[in-house]
Length: 282
Image (cartoon, rainbow, N blue to C red; front, side, top):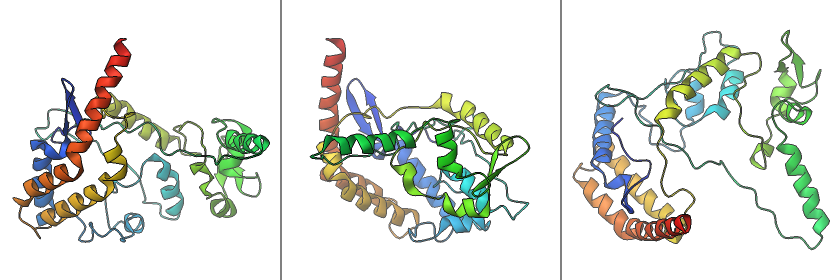
C-alpha cells in the first residue's frame, strides 16, 4: 500500500532494505492505527493462535497466511456451511490511484535433497519416485496422487471432475507434495467459479509485480545470522505496533538489525550483484 520495495531495492548497484525505508515506517504507523482501532484480532501476535480455525469460524475475516494451495482444504473444511465463501482482496495504493505492487516470490516453494548412496541404483529408484510425484496435471498419476482410487477415495461428478469422499478427504492429506510436485495449476474440482476467481485475481495482480533483486544470489550473513536478527527486529516491531514500545524505538530497532546483519548482507549481495553483472556482460 505504501510502495515498499520487495525486501531489497536496487539502484545503481546499491541496495536498500525495506526496513530502512520511509515506506516501511509508514506501514508500521498504519499498523499502530489499525491495532488501536480494534480491526486486528486481539491475538494477532500470538504465534500459537489457530488462525485457520478462527477463519473457518468467521471470527477473522481476512487470513493472509495461506495461498492457493490451501483453497481446496478450506472448501472441504466448510463443506457443511452453505454460506461459506472465499474471496481474494486486491490491495490498493494509499492514495487510491491504483493497485499496490505485488511482491514476487522466489520462484520455488521448497527443495528436496537426496543423501549420497553407495548404490547408484538406489538414487535412481528415489528419482523415479520423485518423477512420479511430479507428474503433470491431467495425467493418471496426478489424479491418483491427489484424489486416490475412484469409488473409494473419490467419485466423479456429471462433468467428470473427481469429488473426494469422506474416506478420500482423510486419506489423501499426505505430505508427499513437499517431496515433489507438478507445476501449480488453477483447478478446483467441481467448482469452476473458484478457478475463475483465482484467474481473474492473478490477471489483475501479476502485471503489478516487482521482484526482489537478490533472488538467486548468496549471502552468508543471510544464511547464518539473519534468522535470529530478523526475529529480534520483528518482535520489537510487534511491540511497537501494540504500543508496548514507543514508535521512536523503530529507528533503534533498524540500527540494531543493520549492525547485527543488515550491513553484512548488503555488502555480500552487492558484491554478488557486481559479479553477476560482470558475467552477464562478458
